[in-house]
Length: 194
Image 1 (cartoon, rainbow, N blue to C red):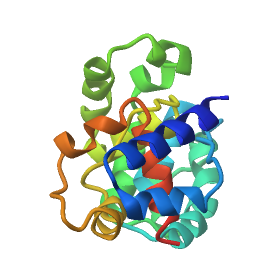
Image 2 (cartoon, rainbow, N blue to C red):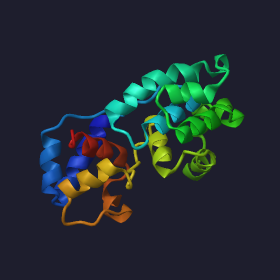
Image 3 (cartoon, one colour):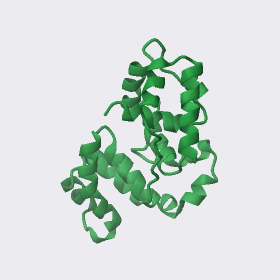
Image 4 (cartoon, rainbow, N blue to C red):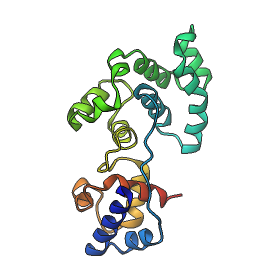
C-alpha cells in the first residue's frame, strides 16, 4: 500500500539523516492516506480559493455555504452578491466567478490533468486569478494524488519545520532526501501541529 511504503521510507530517511525529532514523531504516528477530492475540478479549485489564509474550521464553514452556490451557479441572478452573502470577500468571490466562467477548466477531467507535465498543469492553473503556487500544490496533492509535493511557503509547513528541524534552513534542497514521498511528509508535518 502506498501510504505504508511512504511511511517506511520517511522513517528510513529520518534514521539515516539523524532527524531524531521527526523519527520519534513518526514512530508514534500511524500511516496517513492522501484523501483525494471527488469534486469536479472547478468546484475543487473554488474550495481551495475559499480556504486560502483561513483556519481549517473557518474554511469548512464558509465552504459549506459557498459550495451549493458554486454547484448551481446558473440559478443565481447576482452570483457575486450570493457568494459575498455566503462569506467570501469581494476578491475571493470574483476569483470563484472567474473559475466558474473558465470553459477550458470546466472541460478538464482528472484523467486529462494526470497526462500533463507539472509545468503544463501549473501554467493552466496559474492563469486564473486567485490561483497561485500554494493552490497549485494543494491541487497536485489532493486532486491528482501527487506523492511528491512539499508546499514550502505554507505556514503550517514553516511551523512544523522549525519544530522538527530547528537547526536547518527551510529550502527545497533540504527536503530532497524525502523524495518521492514529500506529500506524505507534508501530511505528517501538518498533523504534528494539531
